Image (cartoon, rainbow, N blue to C red; front, side, top):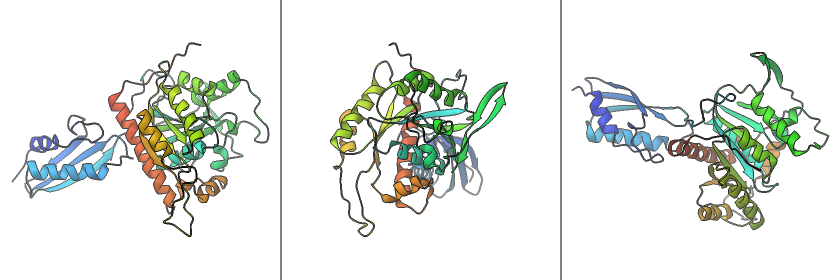
Length: 367
């Protein structure tokens, strides 16, 4: 018996993407349908990100739909592929090959924002995405230390008679930091315009090439650098990092509020709770909520933004960052799994944002 490709397509119209709330056919996710007289049916499902956390459930739903609506005895092969979506304006003069720009911010310092940014970038890369990382923490750049690049200096090349900085690649990530261009032993005594100009150069003069995600590690608080970012590039969305205690959450709320202001309107992809709990190595089943429990989760519910997950307080996270090798590079670490799960949720929220919202635009802020 031979089936028609039309029968297979009609069957797959019954499979709904759980995030985008539409069927796979209308979302143009189905391609390469093949059928033969031996009851073999194969097709490709192209997801919106290689980091999709629902990959296996979608695959299972496709097989079940073909068995229900075509033939219960068919031999079904589903090839899972991915293509990261983007809603960036096509007329942008720079960062043309960058599909999504994800800012990582915090209301206050000391909550581990840079650690989250570094490990999030690596986890997204581990899941199959092309990732870049900009250290925009102008006054306290820490990414060079975390990546073991304290003495690195990017190569300068000419493209169309313009000098371009070549990001340094390490652990599969393209990295640029203001720390590459200043003496690490000297404080940066810069006024706001100088710092903003330095950040703009990392975007405009970086040879970033093709990227699925460009992660931006912002300074803590809400200030000039944050405004410069949204005035320079159309940010896909922002992730807010906090610890669970009340004083940190109060500042995280302000960070969310800034990006949600009518004049700025950058989508908040969600909250990440760092230092969520402590588990001693000798008592792996025990969790001690040193800074409070469910602070970020409760705040996320209150302000109606996604909770992306917790990261535990683990000595290995600090040690690996100090050693220049972020913990997400270690496939054996249980903390790596936590970062992988958060990276999947971030990618998931980016895909939902790209399907349901208008293209991002550079913000025009009137002072």
